[in-house]
Amino acid sequence: HAKAAGAGTYRFFDSSLNASSARDVELLTRFKRAIRDDEFCLHYQPRVELQEFGLVGLEALVRWQHPEHGLIFPNDFITLAEENDLIVLLGRWVIAAACRQIADWRAAGLPLVPVAINVSPKQLKDSALLETVMETLARYQIEPGLLEIEITEGCFIEDFDTANRVLEQLRANGLRIALDDYGTGFSGLKNLKKLPIYAIKIDRSFVRDIRNDNSDAVIVASTISLAHNLGLQVVAEGVESKEQLVHLKTAGCDQVQGFYFKRPVPASEIVEILRRGRFTPS
Ligand code: C2E
Ligand code: MG
Ligand code: MG
Ligand code: MG
Image (cartoon, rainbow, N blue to C red):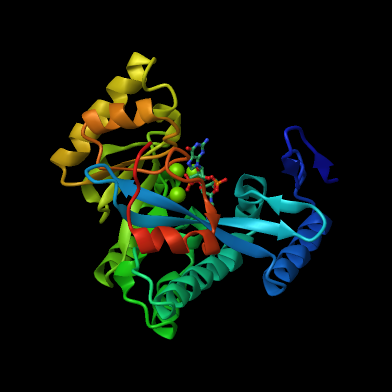
């Protein structure tokens, strides 16, 4: 059922896969084994503020280091994991792995910045999420302010109040929350007004052509002004060029993330970045 696609990407699961129970069982087994065997790993991408290009955070992004198929990216397994509730298992692994990494960097005497993890809608529905997060932070003796949660608007489609309540609890416990992929979902203004978020991350689809597509430029500019007027920080995703960077800085964007500064890299490559604490745009 696994098949190769072009450009070095490996499609691990056929997207047309029917959720037959035999497949589910196989996937469940495989996933659990992969978690147990430490086949997942986190890569980290810096988040940079636009005043002095200081490092202000890292985003943890999961990868599956498959023994036969090599590195598999989240778009090839997250959706299926969500459909099968495996995302809760994987999510627990991600929380622990991120905390363990922060503790390791601390033990190495490195200056720390907050690490953001992505939490999917199913995880927010897991009644044990708050407890899992707080227990893991305590186990590694990490201040809650060093862990950030990135959620998407998909979390609020079914039940806004429940999702909001969980976020309020995380916020009350000292975690910071950002709204990811902003502009791609149901960007109800209620989300910006009511949620206990401190930042929005503008989806990279609006950043890609920001220089040439006037509607993208307008959307980004208005989003920045709206967010600022509501007291929210603005992070732009997917910044790949100096031109995009300059445009965003001029538009008043606070922070960026993207290949222009750094691709997501293994933890070992983050050490030097933590030590320096800033970037110099070329
Ligand atoms: P996201 O949270 O919006 O993460 C940003 C994605 O954009 C990452 O893809 C990152 O590698 C990519 N990216 C960053 N800068 C650039 C750029 O300049 N250009 C381009 N073209 N892409 C850039 P990645 O790592 O493949 O992750 C894809 C998505 O998978 C994430 O989107 C997130 O929704 C999900 N994901 C990743 N890790 C986790 C996780 O631990 N748990 C959950 N639930 N979802 C995760
Ligand atoms: Mg994210
Ligand atoms: Mg995003
Ligand atoms: Mg995304």
